Image 1: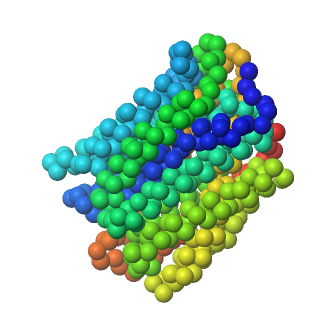
Image 2 (image 1 turned 180 degrees about the vertical axis):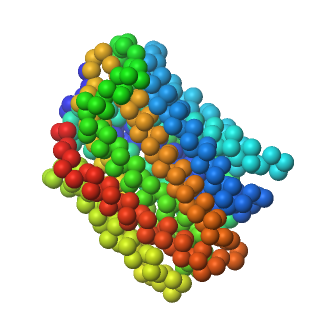
Image 3 (image 1 turned 180 degrees about the horizontal axis):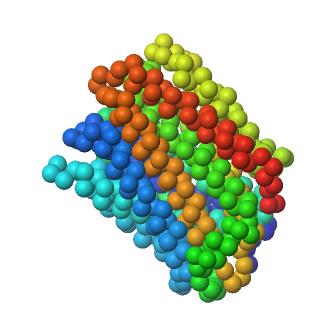
Length: 423
């Protein structure tokens, strides 16, 4: 039986611990890796974007399947923990290969090992997210659990940011990747066992197999599921575009490449500052309205970005801080709302947590893939050259970085209007 009482601090910390090393590997994967392959290999920016987009598309198949088979899996150690352990080994091995590419087969190397990295990530993260739906059934405790996980994720991202900065390699994508890989291995060895040993997993009885038809029926019977996932995808794309183009924007538009570490640090510190506020607000007005409020705040700040130039570092730093306040809400609240929906439709005969969070992870990665593919291909179409960008290329970069995310967030805001929380 799932816990309904207030979660202990030990449970919160143990469950959230793994989010730190995952974020430490996630930040370089999304920010440094595309830049590394575009600048340190013979592959052009459009080809790098296309390959990463194609590799991300494999998640459309693998993520729901990982969730499906994780729901079906049974062992004396539970269903979530063994999957996470296997995924860790695959992720670490594949990521090492990815950041040490073959000079002779660079494009194939990028495709194969990026696919394996994303698969390993799925095998860890999907059971990890699904596990949260089995720890507590309390509406507000689910928010606390998600907030703890995402807070530790932000701390991990801060670590990933500070480590290259402290070693003075933040402007070198290759050295940053190698350094962060080593840091992730060390942090996983310390923190992952805390999650495995310190968080109890319910050993559930065998359930009936979930078929594709049953999953389709879920959307028909639960329109809120479709609404939430559509809004989440658009909002994720709005967040992924600036993350993908951040280094190019700071270096070429603001012309302040040495300030990338400082700006990212400011952004994540702001996210930590804002997270307790959004959690408290969610307890008062509900998760959906709080999430919409965070979208509005981020959009209000980012709407000025396309008008900035090389003289506006201070203004951009202010925008970074204000938009960063919304980071915690974007990370914690949608996942908590999804957990509410999962528990609402879960039955004793059918376990849906894994497959639904598999689809959730798929949507996250699809947004990231679309950001890389869309952003890099559009830049390639206007003749973008990082060494000698034209005025048209810089204007396009600014619009992709700051204009399109505002439009996407407002679409997500509009879709979520009238959505009722499942308390």
